[in-house]
Image 1 (cartoon, rainbow, N blue to C red):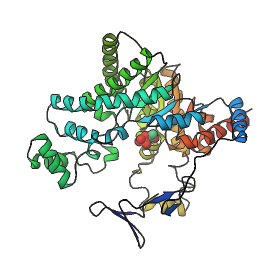
Image 2 (cartoon, rainbow, N blue to C red):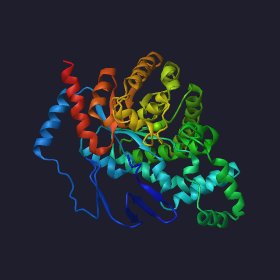
Image 3 (cartoon, protein in one colour):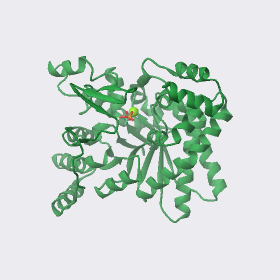
Image 4 (tube, rainbow, N blue to C red):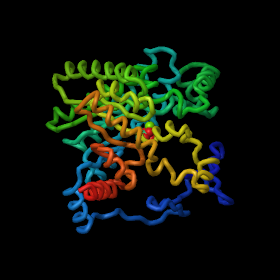
Length: 404
Ligand code: PEP
Ligand code: MG
């Protein structure tokens, strides 16, 4: 929804209409309405008063479908738990790769031509990721935490500006031309449909190994401290059961190794996102090797319609909405066609694995109208950002009451 912004990366400015903002300028956002204010507006934390607690207790009494949260930090996980989230439905690990010096190690990994070089670079990220996961698992002690393996295309991490290419060339002791070549080689015309999701884990299994190690070691460390960590490792963008099988083998091998090293075991789950139509229609096969399904309805909407998520705001979708060819934005409220695929995925999933746990973690998980549709489909849970948890809980309870 921010398609009007003209971002000039070189000048580090944003232009909207006739207003220009530079790096460091303050703006404030109203997260409920989407309004943007110039300057730093004073804020205060929302408080949970008695009315809120009473309504949430009522909701709790009638709900069948529970609510988890999408959280990438311990702080968000704690906040969501205060709002009544029953675990983390999606932890997007890519945000953790961007922070501070991690991006250098990540770039080193991508620019390396050898497996050893990539492993060395990933080993620098391992302790930091382990720390992140310990924090989140601790915040959700006793509740499931679904941690998704790396999802975005690698060129999101590559140095694209000449200065950072020069810096990486010096750091790695290689000519800057080599860096440019690699960056060019990673370029994709539609990265949303390209080398991302589990396709990364298949081509760079060392990334999966490192992330599985970080998650399982974090869980073992907490268990040794007397806590009850419940990690669930999620493989993104699976389209065929073989992708999941291959990634699950890596995860299980690494986990067995760590249990041996540490002399302690933790229960963990391995599951997948269902976010491309092929996964939904072959869900019976995929479920045979999955403990859980999490429907990624953002990508599932993109791939079902064939709309690129990167481009929907540009031209035709706004016109489709204006002319009511689309009655509403399908990225905000789940479309019936996409919901049908979710339903098919849930049904087939149970054929392949009667115990499979099914949830949704796309943006729709926090949209009350979609929550009611997901209840009708029989999902076990929806997952949404921390501040949408109360609304989702209310919608889930209303859906259950309407069904009585
Ligand atoms: C999704 O596709 O619905 C999802 C949750 O993943 P992401 O938005 O990170 O692609
Ligand atoms: Mg996705």
